[in-house]
Structures are given as structure tokens and as C-alpha cells.
View 1 (cartoon, one colour):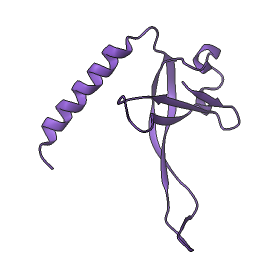
View 2 (cartoon, rainbow, N blue to C red):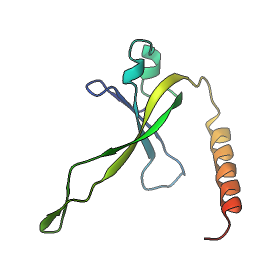
View 3 (cartoon, helix red, strand yellow):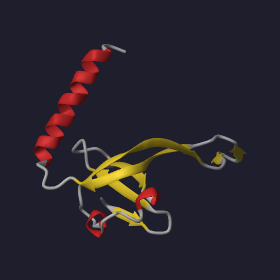
View 4 (cartoon, rainbow, N blue to C red):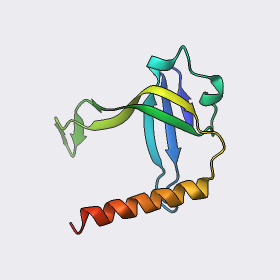
Length: 113
């Protein structure tokens, strides 16, 4: 976990993967449904968490383009958590290797685009 925004009940989770990417992978997790049961240790920066929830889309207001304003709806993706728990001690190198392997299998199954 990299940050907890108290005002919105949102955890910001990020992981610098793949290594050398211009920006880390980031996802917002809405934990408002869990506020009564969440542990303070799960809200500490650096904690690794397992999250179970629903992927949701939130539309933002209009987006400005050039000199005019265009009513383009930007959608942001977030997770509405129904359960979170500490991941415990994980081996980050092993986690990243498994992730690479899963992406490779997915690429092979989909075939050439």
C-alpha cells in the first residue's frame, strides 16, 4: 500500500512492475464497506494486501481539449473491496516471476493480434 486517503476511504496500491516502466502500476481501492473491520496494520505504507472486490468504473466530468471543451467522458477504474487481508511475508521476486509467466501464457493463448 502506498497511501490511504481518509476523506474518500481509498487505498492507493502500487507496484513498480515491470521494472523500468515509466510509471508504477497503480489501482485505487474503495474500502468504505470495510471501515469497521479494517486493521490499522493494513493501512500502513508498504503493507502488501490481498484484495477481493468488484472492478468499477467512475466517469469524470468533461475533459478539455485544445482551445475548446469536449464532452469526452474519462473513465477511471477502481476496485470496490469486499474483503482485504494482509498478504504476509511475500517473495517479491517470485511474485514477479509468476506474473511474467502468466502474462506470457496469456499472450500465447491470444495469439498474434
